[in-house]
Image (cartoon, rainbow, N blue to C red; front, side, top):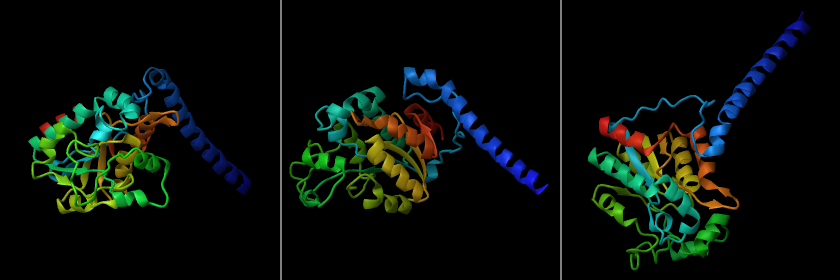
Length: 268
């Protein structure tokens, strides 16, 4: 009897494991044709539970990572590798729409920029992308208290966003130095505004945007990533946007489009 009981337990475990695997496998197969035509498309038969996040403007903020020339303009130093993704997603215009929608409803808006000062170029060790960014002078400024040459530089904000960012209400955090917001004051600034919901957009999807998502979620914020208000580099090493999109789906509280969130903000 004991032997049969143990055997029964084993069979139930097998059945559960097999059932989950079968469900995931069927979902993957069902979405394969869609994925072949558009690798970024949402799966037709997702295996993960749907989002139940409800936007509450009284405790929400729009957070935009790195809305800067070096990432979003053809004049920027990364355009050769991010331009295709930025153009496909209509990223520049979608970020603009998010800024406009948030300002129209007077919700908290925060920008988390990326700046490098001369002292940052003295780091003793760096990851691959850090090495590249320092090599090409990405986000370079002459110093934390020096804005000489900043206007119109790669570190500057995109011109069309300045009317939102420079309105005296938008929070411009201290710069993050690698990818995530654990090296700046974003979480403090949001907490001081009574914010615990974040609408997250900006650059770049698999680097700063994803790192901000992860850090904010770890800190207890509810985070919706706006999938077409970001973009990423496409390199021989991989498609950064596709990589991020998978993790957004797995980790974020919601993954919305710009159309969806603009409508939510307008009608909340």
